[in-house]
Length: 173
Image (cartoon, rainbow, N blue to C red; front, side, top):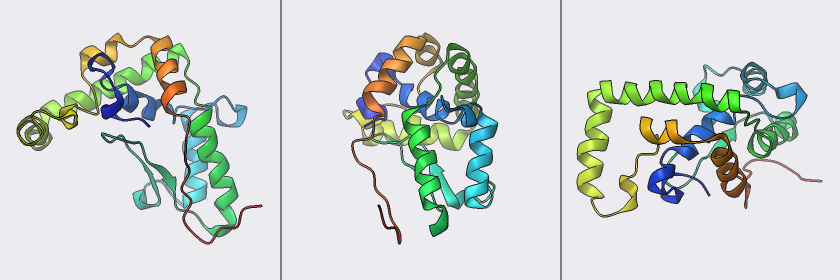
């Protein structure tokens, strides 16, 4: 269970940062970099530019992660998703580097009137007294404040999957 609903005001954006970090590599030597993870996703889905074959995003209440693959690749895809979810390499260097990627996204939102209006006007009006007003992306202030230890602890507490949904013509051994 991760997303802005499960974050305190001081943790705002930590789920989104971790969502990014899951794709910067795992502790598995074969997937120790962003390039290695993306190359494997690309091979399984037939091309990452074809965005409908994979999903990962941060919402208010969860972070869906999925790949649409051929039946013969299902076991490989499940192993890859498990590795990304359970063994993200959360080194100090990767955390600090990925913070800058999130800063760029925050700045993009500030510079994009449609996104800004969505968050600042619509959500603040509709969810005035509810936690859905929390920005999933966080703020520069909160993202900058996260220590490596805080990120790792949140990951360990919130990113252990309690349930796994598999859809398709799959048989498990």
